[in-house]
Image (cartoon, rainbow, N blue to C red; front, side, top):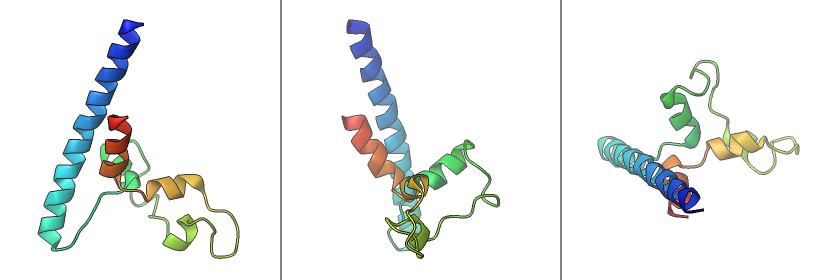
Amino acid sequence: MRWIAGLLRLLGCIVLAATTVLAVGDVARSLASDRMRLMTIGEAVTVAGFGPSPEAAAAPAASEAGVFAADGRRADPLAVVALQPASVVLGLGGAM
């Protein structure tokens, strides 16, 4: 059981390290553009090379990624998750 706890602790440290990298990038991007700019999970996955190319997957509109789409249908859960700030979500996950 100790190795499971150690493995989870190591995984938490790796997630917190990724959070720090994303947070530093967010700060640099915000300073460069003179407004607060947080990288979303969808952008982070695309930049890491795991998602579709930016041309293939356009960012979902806010009306498509809300609780309800514009025509009253339910929204795609992945579109909702993709719009969340990556550094904040990873930071909360790594701290748990």
